Image (tube, rainbow, N blue to C red):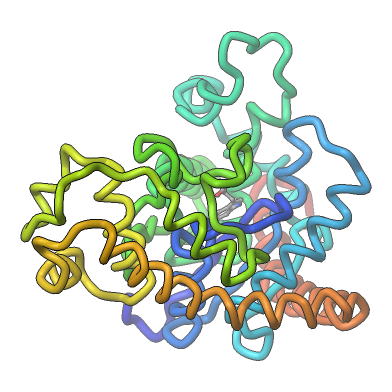
Length: 335
Ligand code: TRP
């Protein structure tokens, strides 16, 4: 992604407590992109409505997530940071694109299948329509690149299909067909510290499964010390980690934090046991989290400043999106 006219758009659901998985998997990749492209990052609070929510919690989570993003290095002077619901054009474009998206396309979305499970009849219509809102988020700003995790790639591909069909059906050259952007530094999936086969997640009942941005240095060190491992020393090549999910995860975390490759990390630690590796890992994780935690603490005490930043971001995003929405309305005859 080196084109100077690249435009990056990405969103994150405001879930409250951020953990190391969010930080390494999404946010630090965003931080690095800020210098390469015009970036729009938003808190996907409309997407939060696809499942049962508590309004007070949602309200609080939006600010908390904004604070966490800024504390982690999203710079409101470089990037456009806003909350999705501040811009009605997302919802309006979603509705227009609902006329283009096909039931069959949405039915194939694995996230829909996973989240609805056996209870499709009881799932919200919004959960089914979730990917079309995501398409609207992306197409509204003519994004060229959409940094997402592996699990969201299918939604970006759907966005491409919607853009192409809309342009074709209405004989316009309106929507830019975006690329998913999976790479950009670490691609490691950050897994639970208790089970290397499941993702690190806020919904895991065990607090020991994840490092939170709010954890103290001691808590971080303790969680890493108690992380599940196997008795073997570290191998000298990445392939040998494949059958060892917990070892693979810890080495992956180390590499993601320091920006090294797995092989670089292994070349230093090969032959050593976890008794030596874990303290080294704890040290780099503490060095990453401690300043973020500190800044997050400060920002939490400045809700007005956060609101001001989000309002400013919304005004800038709105300016970019307005002409695109106007053209989409015109294309379908709503002018
Ligand atoms: N669905 C994304 C996720 O859960 C969040 C999201 C919403 C998003 N809208 C987007 C990501 C637009 C990229 C672009 O991670």
